[in-house]
Image (cartoon, rainbow, N blue to C red; front, side, top):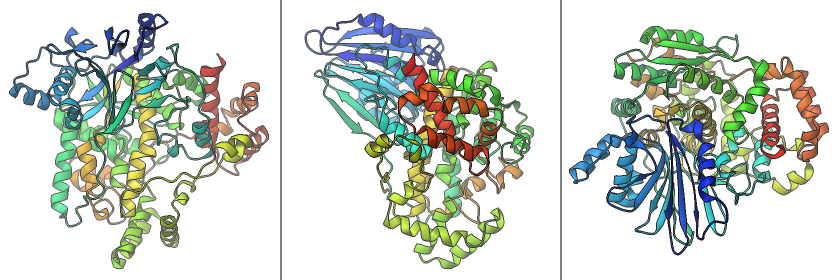
Length: 628
């Protein structure tokens, strides 16, 4: 796990290129405190060049053999790389059989030789997370590549004569050709709608600074012409409707265990984030069985309300089951403004939800405990139908398929398990039916806070967001939207920044592409059954999880009581921010509407904690990146 930075020019630079490269690389020291490297290479005709810089966090092969930039021993190919290709051992064995020799045990050298052997087709062979740049001087091209799910970031900025790229925006901003302007379209979406619709594209909060699309690579020739190729996307037409329960459970279990096994490959200590929910518990308990020794766990509790802000009852059950060396972390909201200011130094963009404040504190505890690699449970809900509204989509699919008895049985079990009102299922089935006719309803189901914004901004940037259709059945489509456009992208950005701020590598077993493809091939009955979600995970984890966790009917998620904080301990801080001269002068908000909304929140008439957090984060971001 590392940080990369570089730039490509078609003529001799009119600035100190080496000094600029060093500054950009130094800005990423937290991503790789163990080593630094940089190199200036000729590229193209006359005075063209490529500048490559790297910061290294040692995870695999702790020797100097992993130093980057790394050049191929026999060809004019050079790489800088951030991430992990977990199946590097299997690829290495295949390359050795083909006559390739190696001098290190790094996955970086495997990637370099895989590219030399298979060209850009190598990316489809990798199982992992990565952002990389390859300079291929023989073929006269430079390649920027990003993993299938976009776990690892790779930003770029293009001018007529340069392409500048880096793992983080702060490094791009150190290049003299990068212009720094806020992206008002992104800001409009961030404030007006749900956080779900902020990270659904490749734009950043800085105008004209974009990301390499996930599951894609960009080939750049000697004239800086860039061509984007998508090497992986989910096939929506592979649903195995006739697969038997036992067969599906066995295949799922094998894939899941192998996904965890691959992500335990490390030459440094591995721990796990443990929430007490099924996803993180399944990963932690599976890792324990594979390692055959206790694993260090880290758990956040953000309040005293059992089952809502505190899942310690279930966490304690897991700890006893696996004899874990455990750590609990509880945030102190008194320092939330100061902490967010520190976080923004690493995040570079406004932070979507208060959840990431708490998880930043967990990352700091992980570092203090001497753990360098940590497993997480991200995306289990999106793969296996773990959120409350997923039931409704399943009911709708059963209705559409004419399975009325099955639908009625599921609705009855769901109501019993979760105490839902009698008329809720019918209302939501009708809503989903109307949404199929008008997809704009899907993105308008959250509170519209555009009334808080300056009317000119609303007029210029307000659009109807319609997400693409992928699947014929509504449950799979809903899960696909969350996995690729909504909740998971909004999770991966802050997860990377939080952990890398502490020089920690975070790994997500549920994001193994093989597991994703298999889960999306399964019909809804294998995800929701008996009024409970994640049916196949529950079945596959029999004998692995404590029964009280495996059979849980409730779900709280990892949330923080920011609604209470903003009414009490952080009340004056929020008031002062909303009425600050800096916020007023930006011309983004209607100050009277802001204060009216805040008064509603203080009175307990409505819960506006989400947008209050977003306004706070946005204003602190402006102060850091545009006021200084």
